[in-house]
Length: 265
Image (cartoon, rainbow, N blue to C red):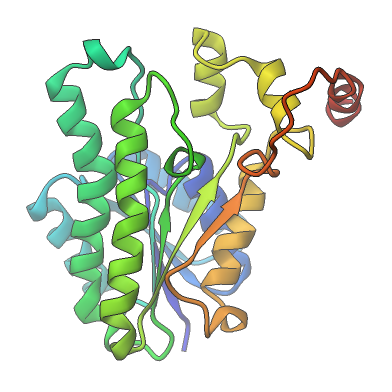
């Protein structure tokens, strides 16, 4: 029987890369996104590669929308095996200037969305032989990211939620893990560079592998966590960050520049 994977925020960026990977792994992929047209476009792209997929609209901040999405999955696929909580947004401001509405919105998307979708997935996952959830955290759950107070707070909360759900739902055989991407070559990161919040050269200097990651590399790790190879892995935070969170180097070193050029070329 074909396994079913739901990916929130699945129509672009890391979500879309994960949808492709799960298609390659033989899953029926449910691409859920707040942009219904984007979701359908993503499903068309997956179909063009020979993968089976379903498009769904979801607003992870809204209980009614989340429930409707899962009811659609019941109708279209009859079950669920994997949930990837990927939906996310980001805003940038000084902490002292943060807008309360934006703070609430980001926590509701990242932290509340992960809770709502996991809660809705629970009764469906009980019927799966291989149930698991993979949550998207961030390097921001390991160290502070100035000017992204709501984002880092939410991502740190997701790590705590992951451990709690893993501890509580493990008795039902449901594995819950989190992935913490570093600086990936996505539209979200590029917007930070363009807007001046991120310094490209400093990021590369602090990353031992001396390059940015690719969405496919995060998708591969999510695929592993959803596979039988990770059948005894639960409650972990797996970093996919090129080593940026473990490097304690603070001396001047310009060797990264030539390495980065070689990667681009």
